[in-house]
Length: 290
Image (cartoon, rainbow, N blue to C red; front, side, top):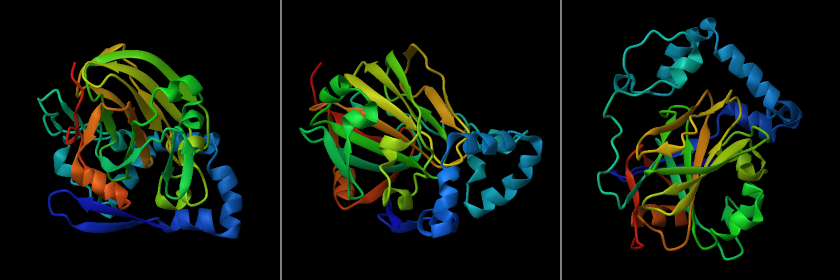
């Protein structure tokens, strides 16, 4: 399986395929046996502990080269571990948010798909029907978001892995849900309901301009940790947290009649094409009046 990703400026479409390792785990009979262990939390914790050690730094140079990372965007630092490199901070002012409070901006560097939540509080991703109630484990909360939008910001291993708050606001509630660590690459979506099964944390956030939103941070295979700062009060563009090694996903859920999604992103999503976005880049605008 593969993902189609479009560049907003050039309109060039590229294809991202699942790595060979993922194909082996999800399609090979012996690989599926290994997968029963590989997607467990303790395996990712073991991998995470190794990547916290000094000797893991030997993998950094090859990782940069293999994934074509523009290292000029980051300060020159002597990293003490691979995870320290992976969760590196970007140079100041490289990810500015729009100054227009009506602009809804991407929380992270990622590939974006947007789904409309049906009145039944379900939506379809890669041929599988997801239930908002199953994702949140909260029926009452799910009901408040019917007819809203489910925005999926998928990070690849080459992306900047820190994410930000999309608006000024207040943390109302934080929920952690234990789960597996499937890859968030395309191949896992063929067989599993990744957003219902994976380890995840979500925050109910009262924002100044977009009403109450739900921000879900989803772990993936070999992600050692999701690190959230869990601030009670926060500001637009302020760092919310970061992922350690592995591809990961940030999902934001908004209520009905709050956002008008940018036309190109909506059209791309209808055609199952991800739109490549940067943290702070406008992806929608507020349509309700405060």
